Length: 209
Image (cartoon, rainbow, N blue to C red):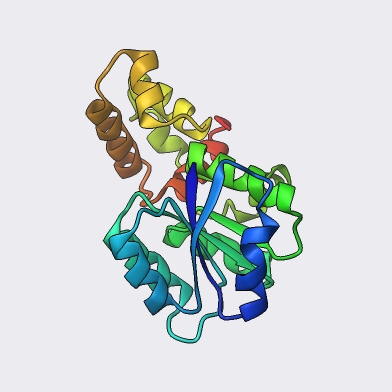
């Protein structure tokens, strides 16, 4: 069961959200909050796996929302569910730590599938969005740094960008989960990235994705 918290200032969205996802028994809408303060208060004392939030809130910016949620529990994933323009906002917010960016025009089945993938893979990149990312490869190409990665680091990088969790990678490679995290941190340092989204971009740039 995946516990969802919705933050949205619009009453009609909050009222209809639980019904919107009611046929998916692996999803549990534990709370709907009008603002970030309410959402934060609930998250501090209740189990939440994914926060789904409107991008435009009265009390905080979306980046502040990400930071406040991650300060409570870095394992909580943040998805923005909004009518705002994906082309403008999605990449900056995913670099800030959001894990997905969904349009309010989507069907329930699309959202349910996205949530399942996000819970499993910790990143949601649609095929269309993946193709559009070719336009975003203006960050410095790391090919000259690729040679600094060890063979094991490259192996871990391929598994990470394929959506494998640390525990799965550890089992496949017969190493400790902490060792997997050490490899990930080393790769991010060598490739000069600070988040999973940019790590994905760099892996795409290296034709590993």
